[in-house]
Image (cartoon, rainbow, N blue to C red; front, side, top):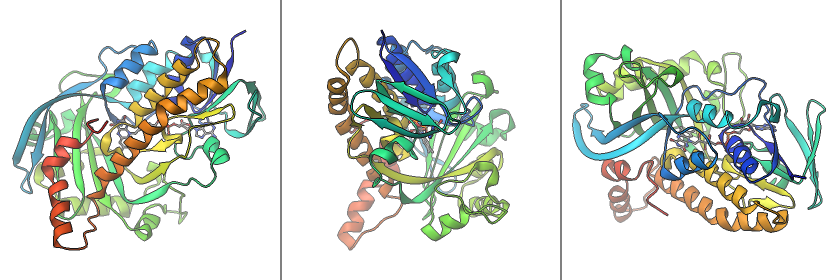
Length: 401
Ligand SMILES: Cc1cc2nc3c(=O)[nH]c(=O)nc-3n(C[C@H](O)[C@H](O)[C@H](O)COP(=O)(O)OP(=O)(O)OC[C@H]3O[C@@H](n4cnc5c(N)ncnc54)[C@H](O)[C@@H]3O)c2cc1C
């Protein structure tokens, strides 16, 4: 009889693991907290070759995945192009990846509205309990339940998300809504701009709604990293009703004055072509940036994958890629009749160091947002490492392996 994997979290990491373990001969059940099919609000996802390989291994459709941005382009304070080099990169969207992987998991194996509450494992069978009263038993429990992971908290309660000191604002702009000048200067490329003393703006084209790739129907993914003290973050996480949310705030609850402040700052600090992007962006929201690294990725008959194990800052653009690499490694290590304990040891050996490296690199990439130099030499070194050129060269590039 096939061994059974209980997968907690039905987002990209959980779906990839389900599809790949299924192909390795496992019986899979996915339990997702949210009650309706997931949506990523169209967020853009930069791809890397290992992600495409993982999708293929999972049997997912990889045709027409997104938009290829051919060049990386840097803008100065006036919005003039001051740097450009060819760097073709496929940018897809969270929704597209989710849909492609979701299609690989049968509906009767994907259970919405199941919030994992607790589990027990003695190193053999594992039992899981859900808030709706459902109980399940299997040979493996996979925590693919994101950076707030219930599974990780049970295994490693000392590991908590650590606020990095800045947030990332994101918004989508319909290509058709853009003034011609902004469209011509900015839309087609992976763009970069460093506003004086106020973080970093990047952006790139992605598909339109329903994965529409036709010119004129696509969208631009606008991104602005901005520092915010712990006190400022607490204020930003407080909604109109005065409720302060823990770790992040649902986008519809972001206060109007916080959004108005962002737009006012944009008008004061960004060049006209980027103000146009922000002015036409819909559903603007922010995500606080946290660091999180687990000391291990397995314990007993339990494994962690994706953000549940390591939350890398978005500068390397690889969270989805590494979640899918985890899934590939897990399915390979647990294929055939290999004992689960042995397979999990192999999984940890394959992925722990790689995840640590990605996590450390993402922190290094984010450091420049908060320069902390002790003296002139430190300041010079920092400036040499963190400038428009290095940021254009290193952002969303896996050049650190
Ligand atoms: C600004 C920004 C830009 C990014 N850009 C990129 C990029 O360009 N490329 C890239 O590869 N990555 C990018 N990422 C990272 C990427 O989005 C994440 O790393 C990735 O989505 C993590 O997937 P996951 O499946 O591990 O976790 P998640 O997507 O967080 O999924 C966890 C799932 O578990 C569910 N869940 C949680 N708790 C429970 C529970 N108790 N019971 C049941 N279900 C539960 C949740 O509802 C959720 O569906 C970016 C991230 C940010 C913030």
